[in-house]
Image (cartoon, rainbow, N blue to C red; front, side, top):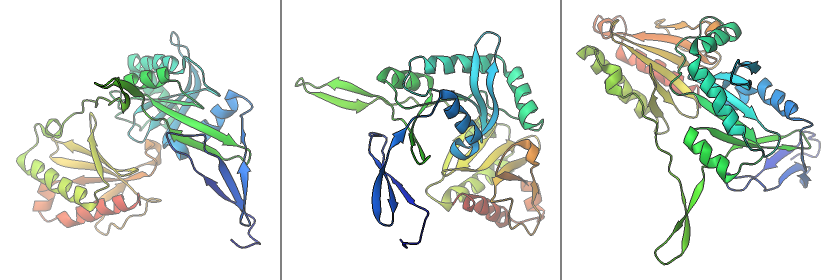
Length: 326
């Protein structure tokens, strides 16, 4: 590093198993330990995360301190990239009851979907649709969690995140591991094994394709194969209304529109830049609230058969969408 360089390099080394490892600031090849500090209040932590929800968690902020009639005051409500409702609960330090509160708030969302949708439209615009109430998220943020917290989070499908705040205003946030259980061996020796999380039951590809024409099914499987061949890092999962393709970020949402005999893709771009010489995509209005998912693409087996565009034209657009995550 040049001696004239004023901006420090911040090095931090922490793992899910040990969040107590020290962080150091390197200036002019000299290491200085960065001391941990505390937020002045829980509200300071709350506001910092709320103001940066999109950057930290890829979640759209909807409302904080929302008062319900029977379930109390929800600290933060959001909507993630997959349009799943998110409840966020903050604690400045280790406290009991955080998950119980968050679960109570999530119960309100499940029991009052109309009120939640109204809240979304009021804060994100009227064009946000297909909210996925079947797979909501609970996020808790605190410095530490007990084994009871971890076990309850496993049962609720909640996400536990830990944070550390340092004197140079560096904030580190990591996901807490799932709990481990002690198991007695045959010789009386105790071993530790991780509790396996039961997978959520997802809507199958076959259920999405139910009622589709043979031509549409063939088109779906052909495009699906080409997408998955792009990279071994690509993951695919199903939602109630869509099939999602992602790496570290989601790059395509697919809805199989059987009645219209077509596939509908929402595609990720980088600053809405896409090479689309045949104008197959159209821009998704920003008011829809999809963030970097900016392009709408319809693919029809009939239109391909009529040579309005080629199969490879569609594949190229999907590859560009994937590349925007790299």
